[in-house]
Image (cartoon, rainbow, N blue to C red):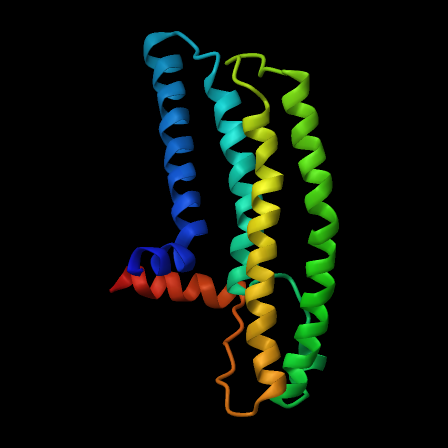
Length: 182
């Protein structure tokens, strides 16, 4: 159970770190190969691009889970915690509906790619590996939205529930810098 809890709390970060390491290693190999050996790797840029696509879609879920996004919340902060939570429930409901519409389209797009048998030009890998990113990440984002919806709904219904802290990008960066400095 500890492993599942750890994955629930850190899945996106783990995957994004692995993707970043892979991109750095592959591009490092490309630089070394090009400048030291005089040979260019034909596959490196393509694979890096596909890894970047996956990390971009995973970042949507990460930002949803940590509640860090571009937003102006001065109006909402004027309300008491339950009023804030009610606004968030409405916002999250709209977001859940939005991803509820996106997921079937991402699925259709993935199925069409599988049926087409399309392969990537340089590596010859099936393109559905890349096209699975929106489908998988939209589902993961939907799960994260539902989790936040239930947290905020508890606050709306009960006064004694602890209010989850909202993250901001600046807070996340400063917390990371502080942790690295220890």
